[in-house]
Image 1 (cartoon, helix red, strand yellow):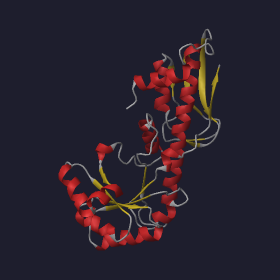
Image 2 (image 1 turned 120 degrees about the vertical axis):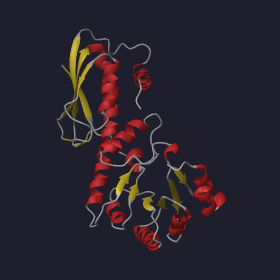
Image 3 (image 1 turned 45 degrees about the vertical axis):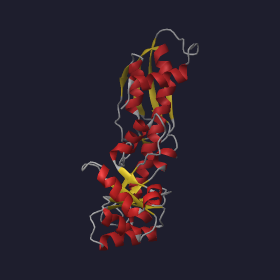
Length: 273
């Protein structure tokens, strides 16, 4: 998903048209060093930046690995000017992606800490940064999460606005007729009593939106009592601290926009020589 055009855009944004700061002669080496512990991600993007600048790159760790402060996650060698030009972009993209992966791993660990037979899957959402969706989705995967749909074409989501316009059952029927047999329908409901209605109408996944853990558990029980095959998904403002309570409801998936839109950057530094 990452192209040379993406890398070129990042570098043009950072370097500009008249770079004096990085006009340094000779050859050098550099290393990307973690300043705090976490889960590393974004190394493929950082590697793409340096390779675009004709530098040699080595990554002693893999995406998804846990790292500690002081760990070297990437080494690079090449013309000093090129190494320095790629430095900030590589640090920024790795820090951002690693922050997403670290938060995702925390959510996955929180789900697995709940006293349930099967922990729910932790999923990202489409609440990604324009231009960085591929980086962020790969970071969610590196943290042990599910990427959910990558774009609108991957799954039909029947949301509150669709239901308001057409009604729950009519909306599901409308999109089921238009979707491929290979495309799943995720239907959003806002009350537990609507969950089995959505499942009966043909939803593959019933999204329980902005419900409390108690409401979520009731909705899960109602879908199970209806003997429906639909999965259940909890979503809407769920934090890492909330995950164990939602996991205990028996829901199949917990989707969290905060994995991508609110993850703090993991701190890295870049050192040459």
